[in-house]
Image (cartoon, rainbow over all chains, first blue to last red; front, top):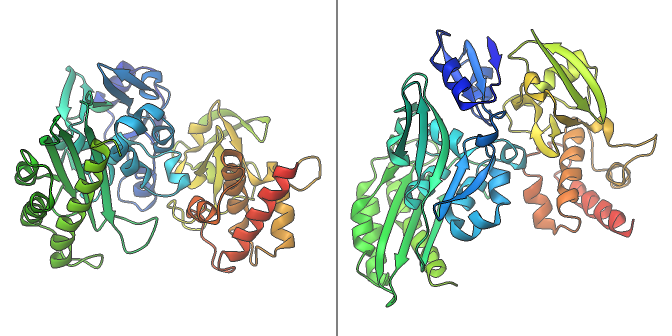
Length: 286
Length: 156
């Protein structure tokens, strides 16, 4: 195996696109090194992106934020601007693993590891986040929901990597939230996760909403029917119930030791409703 | 092999390692710093905790090659000039260890926790140290030792 730590994005792309056999990007390494250790992957080349200065920064951009692909959860959690504008994204990222894992794990890694139970991904999809993908043919901007295609699989092509995550400008009266169910209080993998982001108009009517669910399908899913149940309402009890029912209806979960199919379907609606209530409170400035 | 120059507990160190060798294996097998322990090897138990540029990480989930030009802190660097750190003193006083395998990781993680939060609540300590597993103490003595060390450190 070869280890390389390029200092430019161009250098990283050149290495990844080169004739090197199996290549893997190393950001936080909290998934990759475990996979190597347990013989699930044996890369010929590791490209460590943490020496690329632009991938280590969070920048305010176009009213939103550009989060470099190598920014850790701990760094994100310490960023006041992000905490204020996108508390749901930050709380989802900071739920991942221990303090030790937080010191290394990244949003981009959580996304590209493509676990259906990834905590930050429902929050990012709810936030309407996009990623900057860079490869031999240049850059493209892709909505987050188009990156994972199945467990452990992404839509990235050979030689491509995620350079940054883009969070859009936040309109006034907006809020987001992420909740997950785990049988413990800390340090576990989501049995169900729900991310909700919404915006209210001056009359308190929901003018925009995005809802995403984790661990209930082969990848994190966006639920347009749940969003439609909120838009045009005052996000009252009735609207929340309809949204919860839409969420449950959208689930196609596996049945495993962490949660039965029935449990996940039921809990997806409950969590989405609770997350929406928190997002609503935040949108109202409370 | 990769040649790496880094700072460990303040001292400049140069080593060579395999490109896929973890920082934990480098510390233990090449540099004879055997304080950090391998419990799980997959980032779940925290026995291998060290600091990397001031942040606590699992050294089993860091490649040795990644340490180039960085600052690594291990349990060996916590006592200074032969004098134990308040956390180490309180771990002894409160009997916050039995077999001792988790202790270096707890000390490194607790020190990093107190540097960021000198007056943590019990809940903050328990959540902050959730990445460190102990199978002997039941955690209570560890939490009490960290609280006592925090109080001693605030007094100076």
